[in-house]
Figure 1: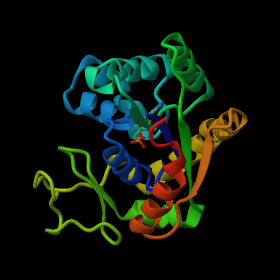
Figure 2: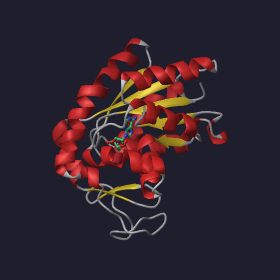
Figure 3: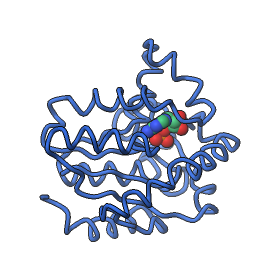
Length: 218
Ligand code: AMP
């Protein structure tokens, strides 16, 4: 099972992508998580990409493709994976297609989570995440069992720097400029599964599982 998850920032993509990956028994590979780990660990790559994440700009394609390809080459990805946040440009999508074709593989489906902009702004203002394990919460919609602490590892939850209003606006503009054309790219390939991302996380998850049923096991 090889899946791609797309959707504007704040669509609930990370939360839903994790749920689907868990249900399908495949690793959840998030380019944003890979980059944040590099930054936290102050690696040479982390130092190089920090400013892009802080301003909400996209990391250049060659760096991104190499980082994601490295993760997909790991043993746990041999039987499939779910990509969250990658590809985000046509160049990345084409690089992914070429890499898959070289191994005689192809994508099973591309999920596009669709959400109205007003809902996105409301959701992102309340988003909190765990700096240790990356799990995502929301002050209104996905509350941790203990306020301000991660259910999994107990670390204090934080608002991500790139969830601040100015950065959110930049990220939405970036999304529309560079990532929206991918919807058309995958639609032409007959891979696109449009999912309504409105409502509670449970409602979206139920909708998603129902629509993905036909693809599981491919
Ligand atoms: P995310 O957690 O997916 O919202 O990603 C956070 C940030 O990481 C983005 O705003 C970009 O700066 C960077 N990033 C993540 N994935 C990609 C990608 N596929 N291409 C370029 N930059 C990315």
